[in-house]
Length: 359
Image 1 (cartoon, rainbow, N blue to C red):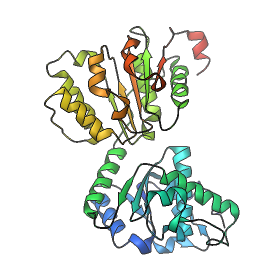
Image 2 (image 1 turned 135 degrees about the horizontal axis):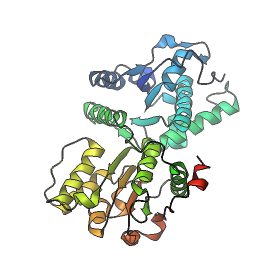
Image 3 (image 1 turned 180 degrees about the horizontal axis):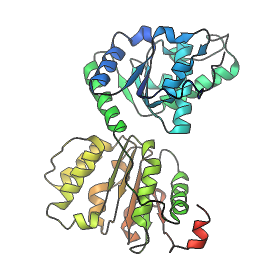
Image 4 (image 1 turned 135 degrees about the vertical axis):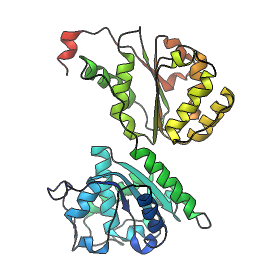
């Protein structure tokens, strides 16, 4: 039986930082128990279900409210996870919240293969033979949720690994994501929404696996930084890590400027103080730390190749799905980026009558 839809009046009052989705018999008294306590110790408000929250065949309003009201969900895939229809229904609702409200989902593959989760093979098989009482539409929803969430970047834990190390990594990543906030932007400038939609349309017309560079190019004073700020605020929650480096031209004129910019980039991404001794070392660290991660990086007011080379030197510095947005007066700076991985947006001079009508 399909549970009721998310969004009942009784669920709207629930608010959590993190919702943990897991099969209790597999991990409640081991990994999930340690993770729950570590998140709480960090001051993160966590929802972890108890057995009495499941009543009959439906997800109750408290559980639905906890999923919808959370900023971030963690799915712990374990060996017997797919035997639990409650785990699967929670996952469906988490995916719905991700798609409609931008809720972040962290998958953890606990002693299971990522391919089994993505492809519904092995213990993650969904079929009428195993779940014969469920409607075909229900099985399709479960498969889609496993495929979509199993395809996201997460953590793999195998026998012999250190559980405490994984707990620390997950808690740190959750803390960083929960403490990311929008940038301050100009209040309701005329024509901004039209331009932001144009940029997002350009960005969305690409493969989700590509690393995409976008140049917002044009003369000074036409609002390139304002547009980039608004775009950042619209999409930064869709990425595992994000950073907005502003006024690069001005900051690059200071002593040891490139090193400092690289340190600021890495600090924004990881919240760690990292000392860089040379631009070459900084470039290597950026590539090593971000090469498998989907990131949103905005480089504001870039005016020469040296700055771009030091901060985003190649598409292989960043993980699949990353976006690097550059504001510049000189679009030739993007000339070294492969043609299939770059786009340019040139804001036109403001036409108040036309653009205000689109707001």
